[in-house]
Length: 300
Image (cartoon, rainbow, N blue to C red; front, side):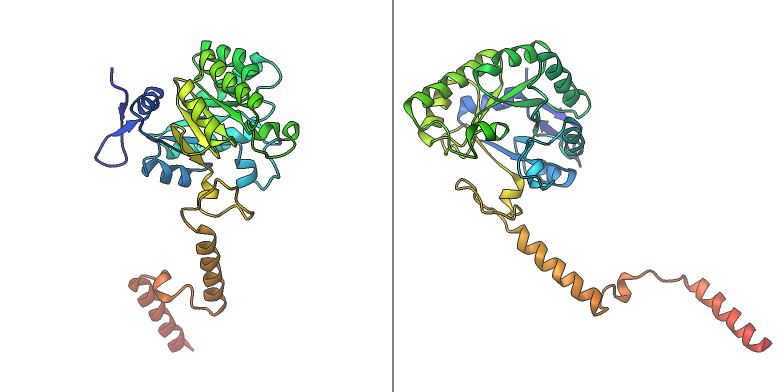
């Protein structure tokens, strides 16, 4: 059985769909996994056409796009709205959707129902759930329902109040062992990958060696099986100081600011739209109007 499946493409060449098995094979071959967040059709399409392996519809949409101070207020319906838009832009990437805060914290039956909505209504390949060992029974139940789950340990934005802010985790020997145990428990429960966020590089390397499933790092150093960044961090669209682990790969903020300033100036000095950017009456209509004007002049 092939690790990837052919899919109808945009153009002449078939697109190879990235699957859970593709990611697992990349770990085995020590080929780095590329991942990024996306929240709408155009950014998802750009990421997919760039060859990104995993696209996450992250609950970070609350802060990056919707202007919230944290991720906690985001609802299932809001996540579905963004996930459906992203799905329309994705052909090859492994599409994962965050389970927002409250969607997997009440009871397992509700969690399964919410997760099924992301699979059935948004076309997700997997859902992502924050938490370590205490989430293992929940992940087992989701696996029984044939739902793929990506785990998430370390700095967990949905636990920001309990953690006392966005702080690096796993700095003591005891905390390191707890996170290693968390990762092993998630793997045993059936998780297909684990996001490691905001932990020391050395610990991330230990976890990556300890588990047989891919690790995706964000603020976890270069020794993970893959890396993920928030799209808006990548292009300087966050309007706030960046975290230590963020590297910008483009400056969309200044590009857009300059473009908007130029647009305003062109409108105000009436150089936009120009004649070449305007529609014109057909020559036949112009001739008819001229004939009518001549007739009216003669009549007067």
